[in-house]
Length: 167
Image (tube, rainbow, N blue to C red; front, side):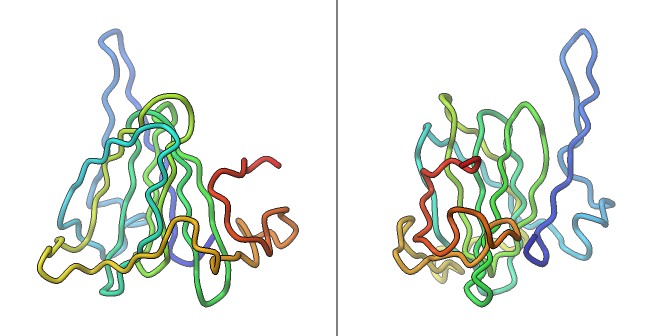
């Protein structure tokens, strides 16, 4: 994985009423380190919609927690050409930490909308946003490795959000 990307599985406590789980705890030092959450956002995304690419250059960390549906989260390092891809679903809860300096985004996969809650370490400032963008289909985004593998069939080609990870 790219340096700083972390994944924490979330434990569900199930009983006859449903389930309860802790979504974030500031004592999860293996996930947060010294990060402090400043803002929580909710995103509802229709199937097949791609929300990418963007990055934050002022030290922001993003923590993604998908509650319903499924998404493919990608992070790309311009310096190394490494791209990491994580599939997250509401049926297998996990928090995915993305250092904001990586280009990142996600695609709603599957046949139902994706409901994502994400936590950020910086407040959003609409008058001076910490957000740099590039098109989701930017032809200059060509990974040199995917999930650490240089043999992945998608290496050396323009990144295709619609290419399934198993081919």
